[in-house]
Length: 111
Length: 112
Image 1: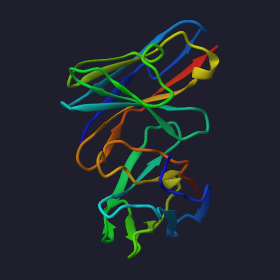
Image 2: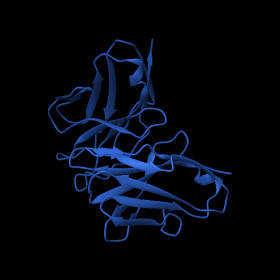
Image 3: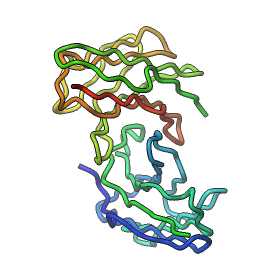
Image 4: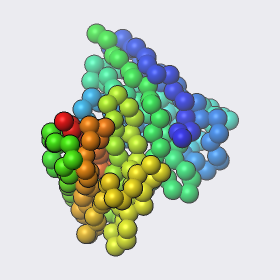
């Protein structure tokens, strides 16, 4: 079973920030949090990952709470092309290449 | 990074037949992963394919139904055998480096 829980759907206005939450209350100290997204009819795409510190790249920012039990993916200026299903994943520390996928959050960016 | 090519991209097959899906990677990788994504659902890992050894199947998936080949470090095939309409899904090939996983565009299979 997936170790994460996410809201099934969210809406966001184009140009505004999209904040996608994820709960991972059973995460272990050495397990990373990964985010992927899947645009309709395409394979999943890596977005970002982190362990303890907040992370930022050209696609998004990842904010991880101090207790590491939850995190938020932030798309700072959402566009229509960001409409997708977003998956928060915590792989097993012993095998971080084996991904267990939950249902994700379906983000709709509206004009 | 890794670029993955899957063939075919889609197919419509008769029940009782088999389909072999090919996955080609542009670099050598140790592990390749095969996933199934049923309509409206998330991804489910079918098996992990290691070069030089038998694939490791997840609970609910068996070799007789989903035989896998891994002849070298850049190529793998997944066969969906004796298909039924319940096998209608998207099948995805994936590889990972130390940071992220890369996916092909998937094979959309419809069994009629």
